[in-house]
Image (tube, rainbow, N blue to C red; front, side):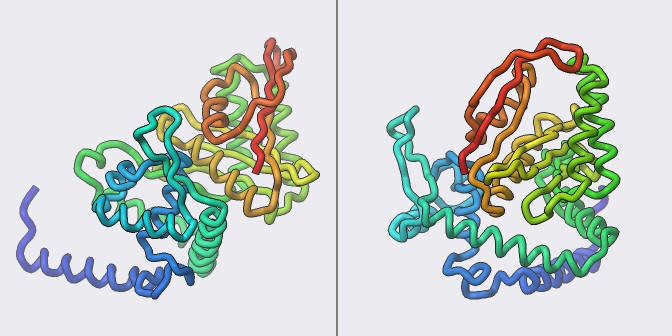
Length: 314
């Protein structure tokens, strides 16, 4: 690789600085408070990480966010004094402190999360589908090129987006193909998935129900659906991750997205039905906080199975 000339480098420097000024203004980083709240940008990021990770420590945050430990300690001290964050002893290691959001902290994070989604949504609403895809591709390119050299060799760009009409056919086809190949499930399972999709198409409420697609390097790699089961209960359905994209945390991200959506929509509980043989999915549900509520042996899809109902109180 040849070295850039001085003129080329200066041109690139000017372009990057120009983009930084534009993007800083575009997302409001120079405002007094993040998204109209009393939190700074760093405080907002710390709240986000604590909320998303469920269990984390100050040392982990300092390392992963590249924040000076002393500065982070002072920041956390202020958040604890404001009853936003609490530090609890780890049941596994009493010397270690686990950070968690208080009730007030969760309320504050919900406000931040909703305002962030609304602000980004308002920007995206100005773009058509093709322009949005171009924007996301450009962002992925920036992320890839500026990542550390050892991280560029592994495909890592994953985004979650609402489904498009053509995705539903993909969801049906991939469920049928993967479960037949990996578990030997017969056509009865494909009929079940087709019925779930048909019910969703008949008139889902976008304020209370949704279907999301995980894209990995621009290609569909996973799916999940959340529907209204009535009486304040949401049902999680059709979680799938393509074999080529497993191990990237896509399944966990899809489930966690459903949990946040359900909370924002005002549900009191999420329920789901799965099978005991789906070990990877069961692990995700358990780590997200779901509790096994019921087990029932049955014969479906040409196989003897043990059906399981899992629940998460919101």
